[in-house]
Length: 288
Image 1: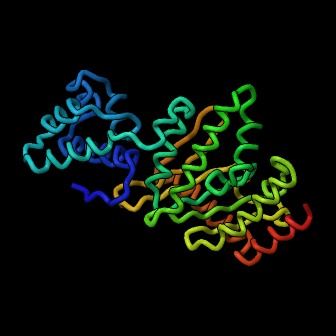
Image 2: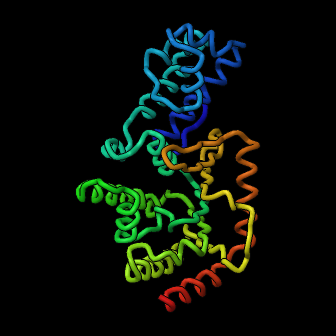
Image 3: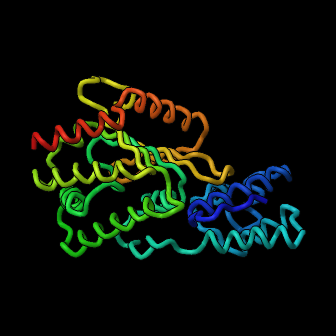
């Protein structure tokens, strides 16, 4: 069985557990439909379990292990222990009333990632936002919600940022379109403070910021923002996250991930160097 890396969050552990169950099923030459019938479920339920998209019940996993011929007590115990850890709620669960289910998955993956590369068009990435900038973004996109709920949403975003301060936190690499830096979110003062914050963040060894300048013209990521997450555990595939208006895509098929990774590589190749990033940020600050 796979050795679980320290710091893995429950979302990553659920994906890892699902992949182990899939390998056990395939080794026995069984279909998802056959496995689903055993646990009084369906083929689609087994698919969701193996992809880590749903929580797994102890009874279902125990029944599947028996069905898959896993009789060794040590092997069964290792998987059941992984199940218990995968079912532990993450810190973000207390914000369940604010977070749509499709974004809860992303927060869990973000918490477990060892590297996050992101391209952003409209705003400064959430993990790099100041509190005032985050409040302005959330307020603009959440018409009709109460000040109390806005405050909780801001608190959630600030707490997400703590992942970058952990000793085992991810390496974060952001390519930001120049338009996002020039858009006056929250007014000139808030925008200026946000740009100065980016300059401060660039001093951290685990944060790299590049800018896609207007001067480059058209480029390979005209389709919009996306993120590519990588995990320390080699059993976990890279995941591409593409957010939409009221949902998100999670892509983990090799050909899909490779396509987005190639686009990210091209973006990084043509965007500013760290020194040029500093220059363009200072220039925009001076112009504000």
